[in-house]
Image (cartoon, rainbow, N blue to C red; front, side, top):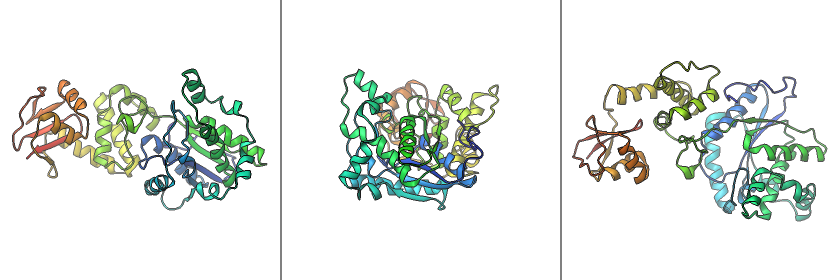
Length: 358
């Protein structure tokens, strides 16, 4: 689903009430995959809905098992609260201040054990084990924590507390959405409408994950956002294009399509106009060979180590860049891992990195 327009399959006569988006603050940084449902929230706001953002400071201490083939590490309340404060800043930058933000620890910390048992009694273990991620773990003899079984019910209870009319999220949240609707009905409420955005893969084509070092983060600088998009393969680019554009002329040169995509993604994260500025800077640096005034200056070192410092990558990634002829020194391609750098050399790395040796 393209996330820059109001979803066409949503009932236009849907009563305008609360639109909910929930996220467990298991890490401090949101990435491009989170941006998709956040943009959907913005579209609902423009249609007259009241936006409520749920930070799962309680459920994050348990760990949402959605799409996970192993148990998440248990986080402390302090960790989840610290992460939540950073996430709130990122969300407000995109949605503005006209939103309501809640921590679900607000109600779960006050809940008595009998009240908690009352929620858990609504479902059987057999029903909860039908979710795909649990079935895969059973097949692989991987452990399932009893606490993980609680998460979809507790996240569903967030919708009961808000009496939400709509919830948005990624398609990996389907099971949790079903739980939310069923729990609302069991509690005598009208079940919410659930709108799911597509899942966007990372820059390397795998699932977007910090552990894979393939994320475009919401707090990346505009230059880094543009550069990261320019570094993706053509295959990944053609996967991303339908998520950002209604129509794309695929007969255009892939480089032009990638610049168009990078401009759009940068605008989505940093606001209209930021993308074209970054495109101009990118073309000056790489197409026209202009050295920027604010060029990064990095102390001389082995070329592999130098690349890791400029591109914030591993040594193995640096060697792959050299082997792929993606590194040039003073406009001459270099592939030798033993190449000796000299002071004032200008090193260009892939589609993103440029630095002067000092």
